[in-house]
Amino acid sequence: MPVVVNDYELTDADIEAELPRHEGEPLPLHQATVAVILRHLLCEEAARLGLSAPDEDGLIDALLAREIKVPQPDRESCLRHYQQHPTRYTVGELVEADHILFQVTPQVALGPLRELAEATLAELVAAPERFAALAAERSNCPSAAQGGSLGQLARGQTVPEFERALFGAAPGIVPRLIETRFGLHIARIHRSIAGRLRPFDEVEGAIASAMHAYSVDTATRQYLQLLVGRARISGIALAAADSPLVQ
Image (cartoon, rainbow, N blue to C red; front, side, top):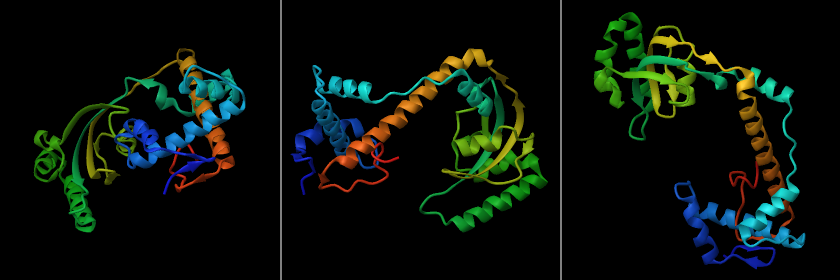
């Protein structure tokens, strides 16, 4: 069934030209089609408003520059953001840690895997000196060859759920299993190195830029929603996952 947008039927050539930009996405053909729909709506709206540009990208830029008006954040807003998110502006913070990974895969039943992880954690709470031996024996991570050693980690070097458990934890065995997208972890903290909070004046410009970019992105998504809501689109089912069509 052809995809039709306001009486314009998308061609295979339209979608094929867009497809390379979506390699690696879960549904590249669908996402490419959505992107072509958006570009068509933007260009159509630019033409309706009498805008002109040498090419399609320039036309879209001209339209967004006209329609998306977002004020720069003031100093007070930037300071409030800075105070609410101190870890984002802390540098030099490190944690030295080991871990044992019980990897979750489709071939492994979660119940028995969790039982093994819990039993291993209990063993290590009672005898932490066995950490390296049990990591070598039971961990599904390449670090098992080094007794589970991860070395020194800075913020941003590991997945958020693992990072949250490590940073701020007391030295020794973390007394609970840590669940991440990779599986179940047992972690041991050797030491933590406190970082330095950068002064607000040092990061104010970067905060203002990031906040403005976020506001522009949000306003653009809302504008695209408006265009899609006004359009007649058939031949494709659009869903909330089709960002930036729906937030």
